[in-house]
Length: 93
Image (cartoon, rainbow, N blue to C red; front, side, top):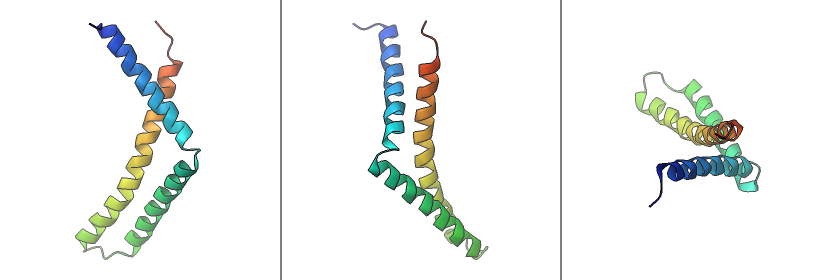
């Protein structure tokens, strides 16, 4: 039977590991590729939004969703990295 402390510790180490691996992944060829594609997708959607008919709600929603999916993916990885850095900076106790 495991204690609550062990489960908490395991979860913390898992969150640290996820953030560390996400940070390292950004520097890999696939990570760089995905980051560049996400940024290009955001920029393309923003450019199309500038020319979109302001009364075409369906197109505006489609373009917003395209940009948001790319933005969310990047932000989730960044959040994992930041959480990992914060957890590693906390004093053990």
